[in-house]
Amino acid sequence: MLLVSLTKRFKFMIVFLIILNVALKSFALIIPLLVAVAYLTLLERKVMASMQQRRGPNVVGLFGLLQPLADGLKLLVKETILPSSANTVIFIIAPIVTFLLALLTWSVIPFGDNMVLIDLNVGVLFVFAISSLGVYGIITAGWSSNSKYAFLGALRSAAQMVSYEVSIGLIIMCVLLCSGSLNLTEIVNAQKEIWYCVPLFPLFLMFFVSALAETNRAPFDLPEAEAELVSGYNTEYAAMGFALFFLGEYANMILMCSTINIFFLGGWLPLFNLTPFNLIPGVVWFGLKTTFLLFVFVWVRAAFPRYRYDQLMRLGWKVFLPFSLGWVLFISGIFVGLDWLS
Amino acid sequence: MVTVGSGKLEKIWRLNLYIDSKLKMNFDISLFYLFGTLALMSGFCTIVSKNPIHSVLFLVFVFFNVAGLLISLGVEFLAMLFLIVYVGAVAVLFLFVMMMLNVKISEPGNSIYRYLPIGLFVSVLFLLEIYLIVKEDLNSIEVFEFNKFEYSTFQSDFLVNTSWVESVMSSTNVDVIGSVLFTYYSFFLIMASIILLVAMIGAIALTLHRRSDVRRQDIFKQLQRDFEGATSLVNKKI
Image (cartoon, rainbow over all chains, first blue to last red):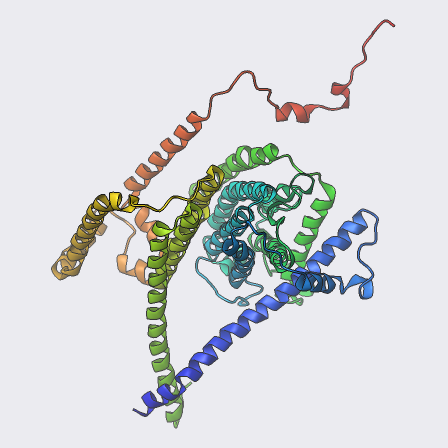
């Protein structure tokens, strides 16, 4: 009886503590993510500048280190504009959805051994599902703006993301066949012998290119081809709406790099399992690899011209799809033939 | 771990267990009600709303809530597949087409009453079917015994590698679904894939008429071009 009365007395307290626990964990993930997004934009501008022999932002703060904060502040204090013929509710919801979906996937990404918010059994499928939902924010933004530029950008983006998801799914299937688990932590642990980028090198390249297309990055940034479509689906957005799209896009970029890292570059595993490499903690390895991939994202943007849309679709459907399908058959054939499936 | 004189610890432990079970149950039930209510409401809105785009978005919301229900039932694999297939692909294409067609907002009118009889008929039929299925399931203690017998004969006679209880107890529901799908229901799996293949080939065949008057690019030929091949000296008299 005493226990029951105790429970009743402290019930709200306990519920409050549970909620507080979840909220603190989430904030511990979200705030560093936002800082990372801010400094990714700075990294992009700096790297692009040095590749084009410019200086890049160097006025605000030391070496321009406060530039992202200044940009964020600018976007925050600007006026929010609602187009009069827009579908207001969807217009407001679209950037929020994009941003939330970009944050949601981070809950299953493992940063190190046992450093994961939710150790989901179907983690890979969760990442895949949520990233395929990212289309909704974009397509509804384009439609609700009631503007031709935004609408065309949204249509392009939706078609592009749906097309490249197909080959991404097949490539993920190959990785799953090799690791034998849908859990992201176990996928990384399965790479202890060798990172999957060595035996599955073509798939690694294809996944990287598909990730570029999936995040609407150059050379596949047709949805926001500024020469034709002003700014694509976010043409009509100002201030916070635009900032949320921007944050969501860059958070998705970091997420894609983390998933490439987890699937192919061994996550938090060190380069060699030897003493000097072992001493560096796994989180640092994770960060280093992801940062390297992000650098390559920026490098590609500085190096390659934009694709034409029909070329983009051809690459997705006529090159990547048959090739990744063939790899699925090839890998499962090897596994069945050599009896490696446990 | 528990030592002598740890009555207090044990009490705390019991308290924790009690709170855990209580909270979890309450939480599960409230999640069920939340998802169920939202699914029903947005399903209603799908039918009622006048703008077709809003209808599709509400439909997406229905899918979301049903996925949530499936997760709270513990079948997270099916929930994820639901999200990937229906929300990530089918509904996107649906929305895509809706937006491109530029469908005007449908007029409210007495059109609802025209569809009422057939709607009622279908829903009554559906209810009846569900009742039959649930009835079969509910009074099935004897049937369960029979099933157990049937399963064991199945296992000993036809299958090599299935121990139902163990596979259910130990593995994730991906494993379970896979082992059932590829053993008991392999025939249906192949049937379904053949139907999909036929649909795919049909879609390709529909779009595969090449007009002769359209100029096309041969990417391979374009990539093969280099400086030597592209320029040539012409001996021309001036």
